[in-house]
Length: 545
Image (tube, rainbow, N blue to C red; front, side, top):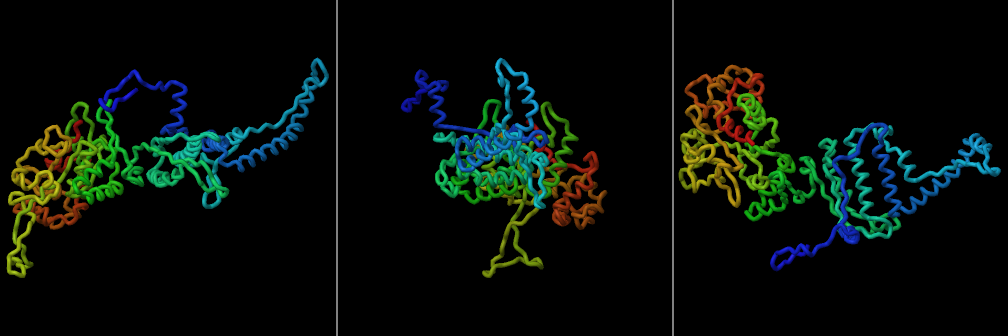
């Protein structure tokens, strides 16, 4: 079709017929693409030689391209000599039957003389009689079907790439297309994480030479043509170990007929435009080392630390047992949810959350603080050299707080625009956001922020604070006192004058051990302790479609 750049109109009366043989031929000279399907004919059955069969295809392409002319001529010469030797053997082997055929004669004498000769076909010879074997460090040799499907799949892909790269070159005296594309679909099939790591680390090296057009006398490539390759994957291990992180293209299904494609470079630009290049470098490093599965998740939870990470699966299980599912709602543990540990710096990930567009839950703490004098060990006020009294922010009960020290809350609720007390008054729906150019509160938004709320007449500062305040949980700890090795000063749990804030400050010896202690003491029905209300509310929102 003809496109008019001046008025942006399309003239459909002017077009190229792609079915026309001449057009097809021209297109083949411009663009050529090959692909390795995810549905590969890989098997480790003894009677189905996947790799051995591919050797004949590799030979066939080499023969057409004359890449290794000397080796091929040598192969042909050996087969001709073998034909002659086998011909003599066959003559003796089949002499009895050929004589019997000759007795029947014909109209004339010697009209029914036959002879059995050897006619070895090079391709068929390789296909039927070549066996790929594995050689181990102790010099033991095993046939190809002795190995697992993972290794078979990996080696088969290397063979297949060799075949397809030869096809890109086309035949002898033919010129490769101007654009050559190789698609590799889901190389992770049948392979474990370590093998996926090996594949993605080496694929660039394997394909760097492109299409070999000419070699010198020593076999060194002196002329080649590059080609592009595209790998589609659902493997977080392949994404995490991709040598060029910015080459990742992220595809997200928005609806049945709408798939949105995004370039990681766009995300990098967002951070750069905001003057946050360091945050992007950290994000890139963090994702490649820890959490690349975020790109394949349907939903995400951003948590602070060990306690939430350890307890979250148990909380999900507990909710699924206690709260019935709505229509078309799946249990939390049956959903594709990625859990990302970010400390209290979820704000660094806000551009990534917007980029992937996943329904996301940020679980954070109020981290209430107030100004107070800095004191010496004896309780006296510390002073500067100029004899001025010094003040700083100190953690405190929420009821005494002047503000929050939490970077995530300060990002979404800047202290110059909203007070700490007003943050506390916000409803669950008022802590939900969407982003166009900036984050804005929106009831039907896809990002929900949750932090401690008032429960049983008290608002906690942290998870431990909120957990200890609940009556059922205090009973749970006291009933299992000997098993809670992550806690200290357990005597305070029996002192009614000590509130949950005091217990969180004085009784937690190790947050990770404390979380594990909760799991160790949980009964089979998950009913002997209680989830803090703010987490329960957030998880139930995330569970919905």
